[in-house]
Image (cartoon, rainbow, N blue to C red):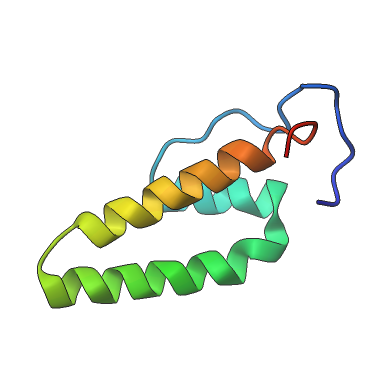
Length: 77
């Protein structure tokens, strides 16, 4: 991660758990992972359409909320 450690201080507040908010947060705390997120979102949407279930989207949001939560605390990331 390119951000300096801030001794337990959060880099950003916890974002809402939706794709747009998580994408904006990821752009701040781990911008190099945005392509991975976008690819995952595309796959989750395709799977949701194919299966007729929202579970792939929920899993996508849970995964990226966890990634952002870890990255926003540089001292422990």
